[in-house]
Length: 552
Image 1 (cartoon, rainbow, N blue to C red):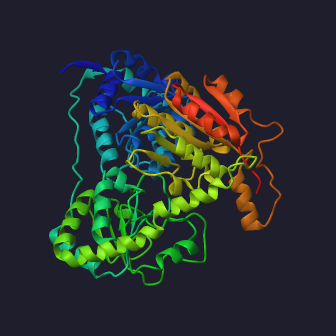
Image 2: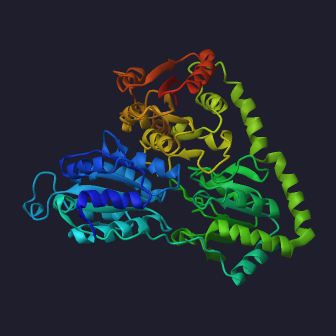
């Protein structure tokens, strides 16, 4: 065994686990890692200017690639800064190894500046948290962390790295990676029960979620829906490309309005849930979204979500892609010509009100707002979608300006769309940077609100530094419009205290230019389309600030 330092062993282990980029914001306790980077030139270090930006960039990289990612932050304050973004990574079940430098063992007992128990801080938001106390344990810990992070249900893990461990040297066996094959299918009896239940339903509906993306099951989900002719709904938090939008069975995303969801589902007699927490809501309501007595069958690898809030008639813990493949074949065999005829009739009925039909009608309505000044946010979204380059990745965090994204943006591949998931704002800009780093050959368009952007505006510097093909469409409505809307809706008040970005207003063009970007401001709807098309066609990182209607 070769003699190696802890810092170099750590980076070698990350690379052997498939890590290509290390996202970080360095401090004194991370200097050993920075020192060792010269020994690992194929590992790209991505510096971000604040720790929540670091973690969100790593999260965006993983969501846009499906890969394990690594991020490094600076002791207790840095981990504290990262906690909101770590909450988002927990929500999306992102396979991430988050590390932080820690004071040398023994020195921490004296409680020096910046010291705290990092493991206890991280534990509530990760699958596993540990501090390395012996250099000899480092390979086993990193290998275990990687295995835990990428095994479904996936999620972030945390390792505390004391300085003395990183600086020490020893003869180490770095071991080898372990990949658990979780692509399991249900047993034959379970598949038969599920097939018979679906065939017995007269008006089934399917709700799909993010396991369709993580299992790479878009094509299989579409074939299943085509086989039985059932309408397909996207889950209530539509943060990914969970089903091909232009498929004739797709009818759109469910809202998070309990009365509206209940009304939609009342038309059906069986809810088929695949890879989703199907009815996750936001604000409380006296109305339950699930119609009384509606039966559910549910399949997925995240057993916590199965039967979590409602009883499930048939509950199966299995990979959704493998299940679709086996189940579709079984349905075709068992259903025969009768099922084929039934499916054809159902699909024909769906076509008049599916996603494509609804989009055509919606576009006509939105186009009537083309000349409005200030620019209408829905029209801005439509024109942005229409101007997207071929094969672009669309990243969205715009709240009041983007509720129509699922209705206007066609999902065509599993990594083509990424939206805010957890509700904690500030993910969009760094998430777009991470998505671009993961897909250097695809242009990225980030559609973000002004309030969200101010949480993590530093991410623009990293995009400019790496000369990424990222275009930021920044929607400026002058404040926290969603909070104004809810204050008016929930409390009947127009006293919008602490919700405006005025006196002074924020100069996003000047701010973007100071961070190295080309920046343009648009307030005239007549110039919008040409500005978007021109910006999207040119290389480089750019920000297009669009002044939109902000009244409530």
